[in-house]
Image (tube, rainbow, N blue to C red; front, side, top):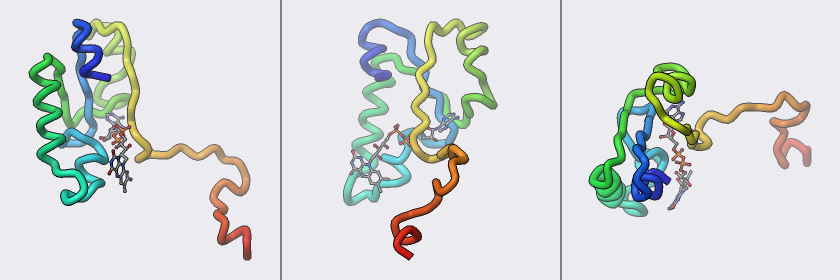
Length: 103
Ligand SMILES: Cc1cc2nc3c(=O)[nH]c(=O)nc-3n(C[C@H](O)[C@H](O)[C@H](O)COP(=O)(O)OP(=O)(O)OC[C@H]3O[C@@H](n4cnc5c(N)ncnc54)[C@H](O)[C@@H]3O)c2cc1C
């Protein structure tokens, strides 16, 4: 998405909570399956297109959407936080799994 937007002339900033960019593709998938060099090259490609990257910045804590859309002057914020921090619904039985149901 960052590349598509940059290609269309938009100013794009990617904010990453961790110290390293790439998400699960970098820290979750083993090297033999997805070499980190491929991710690094993709990130360099995006940088060359003008995409800005900020690491160690937690959206909602270090910076808020209001700040980005206000003083920072962005027109839109797209949230792509992955599936690392699920939010539970509080519905009874949501933590059951098939094994529990069979017992
Ligand atoms: C075991 C496993 C193997 C896989 N194998 C493959 C494969 O071989 N090939 C393939 O294409 N896909 C594979 N996938 C799927 C792939 O990893 C995911 O589809 C992809 O990583 C999803 O990207 P994403 O950017 O949506 O989320 P993520 O990769 O989870 O990235 C989300 C990012 O958001 C950051 N973040 C979260 N909250 C905040 C916040 N508040 N502020 C700032 N940043 C925040 C996180 O730190 C993270 O870096 C695999 C997944 C798993 C679990």
